[in-house]
Length: 353
Image (tube, rainbow, N blue to C red; front, side, top):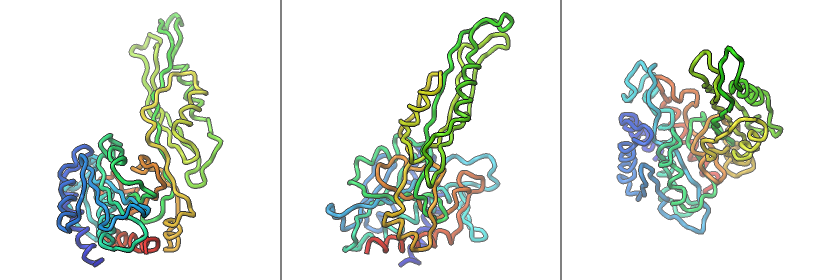
């Protein structure tokens, strides 16, 4: 059965690559996922371009595992030397946009779900969710369907981790900051320079260290990434706007970080969203212990995923390498998918049977 699953997963991934699926434009890949499950007589539910299915013998008295990955992609960058929508295997590599992030993970999790779909006496329920709008954290993605699902006890989120166990993930908080001054003529030195006020706040952002340090994710990282002020060389600007990118660890909520920043800087601070919090799962959780038993290593991931939208313990795990994501001529090794399916199954067998 596993060899058949490997072949079907590769076939489906090639089809997914060949169909454009930018965030909010995943209609064609959603249809392919529907067709995959339809051919196996697996009933699915759909909301927008999010598709999910429950195992055949779903029992509401049992705990439930969510298997989640996404089928949208970023747009191909200008560095591509090959057609990003041409799924081609060369030297053991499957090339194509979304092959690594996160098509390989998605088809592997779908294979895992299919493997256990008909089994009666497993200890957990399984829900497979192929989500949309992950790459842009869109409102029509996983956040829009979580309330439609049964209660989830924990989740496996398919992202490229080289099949190592990412037991924690940094959250994201983006701040728009506005230093307010008073316009004046530069020659007279009149006015109140908003740039200087912004510089004071930026210096605090550059040097401040949050006291609580995560065992897996280290320190919170704050970075000023954009700044804008003034439109003439001889006019002191009344307003200076700058943007701060904050990567939040599991030691703080986004709200806590926002409050600390506001307490320390003398500028107006506006958050873009508080939804993308850090996520984690305990090293003592059964799924983590099962992975360690299979020779997997644990680590903290600096990259953001749909984990940030879940309110349950979650493990990020999948075939492929995060360093290939969003790169030109993106690829995943064919044997990474095969090994991924095999390891997913072994991992779930440890806790399901």
